[in-house]
Amino acid sequence: MTEPDELVTVATFQDTPEAELARQRLELEGIRAFVIDGQAGGVMPYLAESMGIRLQVEPSDAAQAKEILGS
Image (cartoon, rainbow, N blue to C red):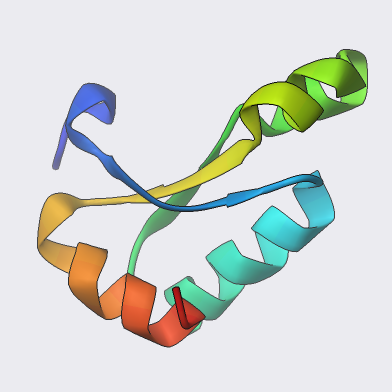
């Protein structure tokens, strides 16, 4: 399994529900995905606005994930 610092960001979102929907979409396609900084948006919303909530996957899945998400 890839270490968290080896994951790559394939999309960023302004809110957690949108990021979670994208994560679920990728997982339906067989791609393990992780929402990073999703909790910060609820506790400190200004962090989500400034940094975004990141959706990350393993590097080997990045191209396919971007294609699925249309990014």
